[in-house]
Length: 246
Length: 246
DNA sequence: GCGTCAAATTGACCTACATCAAAGACCAAC
DNA sequence: GTTGGTCTTTGATGTAGGTCAATTTGACGC
Image (cartoon, rainbow over all chains, first blue to last red; front, side, top):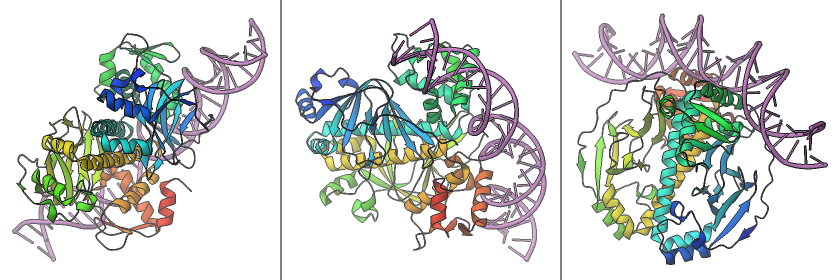
């Protein structure tokens, strides 16, 4: 129940270049998936590529939702704030993920980059025009949003009913599934976010996250070879702990 | 952190009758919204009407997701369970709301009626066929799912960062906005769910919900004229409490 | 009206996690 | 490699809300 302050540069005018979707290396996991070559050209025409450094605000909750974004490299955190500064992370995004969901034409959350990040930006108005003539695209979007909804419901279960240890274990497992591992081992995950970001994602404090991680280290379930890198050394035990099977 | 047991009859084979969408009185708020008369006939052809009593399981988490439903009367609770029985409500549904979201072709949550309830049932396979030829329908579905996602993110903020009092006040406000009031006064809301349902929705225990409600009564912010009916007597104060503005 | 049973309320006590505070560890700049 | 700042870890203590248990209230059938 503490108030937080977060200093970060805001994107007044994001540097943007037109870059053809054809060159995009993550098309198979993003919005563009399942589009024909011709369709892709049309999508390409209304998109531009954006690069930001670490800690840059990409969108602000309540601002008019003029753009949608697709993460193509790096990572992003999404969050909502209460008037007194309490913060809830609503998600971490990695290449292929999508952001810009709106309510009443305003963004429903703020977004900030966690590291050097590339995004593909679409004008909402133009994308909606395009949706009318590309049914595949609308279907793709529906699938992506439905998936996000299912994940959001999993997160409700976590926030409402899991213990601190279960929360942290579940979080590590979800990263393991979704995040791109920088090593080739599936058990090594990159943690581009800080402890307090993790706390605000799990409904815990920084201190509790830290204590829980050292606990898991002592139990031999994880190890942290370097800052920002975490290795899972006992996947079975981690999975059991995440569901309270102990 | 308690284990729960819930006894309720399961729908082995739901009674269903074909009923034309033309007669449906909630079309303007449901899936069918924004469909032309012709389109409506096509949707009607793949839907059937279902009536259930109180406490009937409509869908089970993990079952194959063969159907989608639209609530046309009554109310429904959605929930997920942990292996040890801990439960998290993911939503309460009222006429116009939609259920049946799936992950890997299985339902992502269980659903149970809170009172006598009518639903409109669609075969998923047939609906997907129809989506291909009715772009309006897919657009409608996308809007509905996007809205649900925004609400889910609000609920994350509630579960992760609000106090018990803020949770209960936020809950009452959201019901006030969404639920059909049986009286004509906007401040009178119907509470078809029990205290433990509310607790499982807010990440609290039955006892804490009860205590918080009596607290609000003593503060003169609400009154409970009859079981299942709640009246908001100080809307401004309730709104402030919901956001922690005190 | 009366008995039964489930749900809601209230009270006493406890604990998981928050809060407060003080070291360490990391890292970027010079 | 020293310095300043931020982030993480660790420890000591506090508390919101959970747990356990006992009434009370309400709904329904007879």
